[in-house]
Image (cartoon, rainbow, N blue to C red; front, side, top):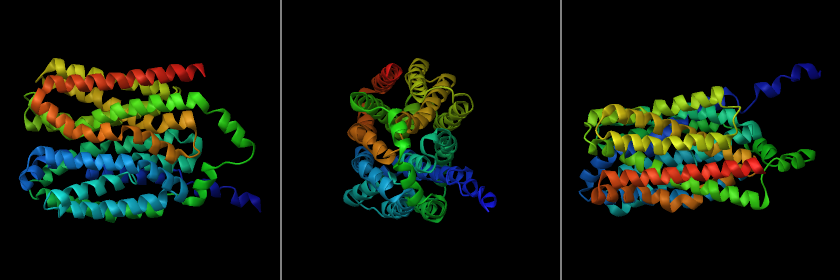
Length: 409
């Protein structure tokens, strides 16, 4: 009697290809609609409202600040209620928030819409998706996280050109309404019907018996855990500033170097495939490396890419090499964000841990779009890029220090 039932766990495996593909689709739509579209639409929004660009980027910054504030709460909700409920509700709320943003007519309604939009984004983007895979696969989720980010890397590649093309027929309000429908019609059903429920999550999050001692023994605790957390939080915060600033200002910065708008969009679109290429190499050949080693080596590519851009000026070739280096670093950084905490701290309470790692950098990440806009306007391109080089280099050094500490534990 037991033989026919033995294949059932594999058939019902919640961490299989079906889950990865579903989450990959929702991550592309999530980042594309909630994050990358803003970089293309911000100038049109500024023109529509008739105010200074600082107001437009200030609303985005307020939203990022709100996302940092609610991230620990979102992590606790994921651990307590499961990703199926949290991500389904989150994608429905994201769709409603996009509709509200499309109807904003002044600073109050605009800022409120952006705050709600970025706050609910914590319920549907990578941290929540990584938690879903970890809850389904436990400590063996590393490969699944790499596979997911391989798909998610197409978000900017698809949505920057798509949003630019839609501007030929729609204003920014119409585009956000279209993206709201995508969230509700596609993301809600995928999250609701594919993600694992709470029962499986509880089993992975709170193991019992002898396995507890074995698992705890493999992860950091005490002073080593606190030190690792601090270094990770520092690195993620500084990288968060760079990525947050570049996600909004990359096209503007490239055009400021003398490149045409079409060339700037083309170079910006190279970031997505570069992310995917880096993640594919990691998935195929990097499994033998410790995640902390991948973290610091990939982080080094980011300041090197900015140095190429700074040295190359308006040379499209060097700007393209920058996009490749930046994209690979950013792509691997997304994997690292999920795999390093899993390696160091374990799967128990994983959602809350990711939320806590996000919280320390909330101010610096939230301030990035507005601060960088002001810096470019007041100081110019070179000082702005020097700041990005400094921040990304410090992040790489923090991750290198973390790898050294972990090797001695």
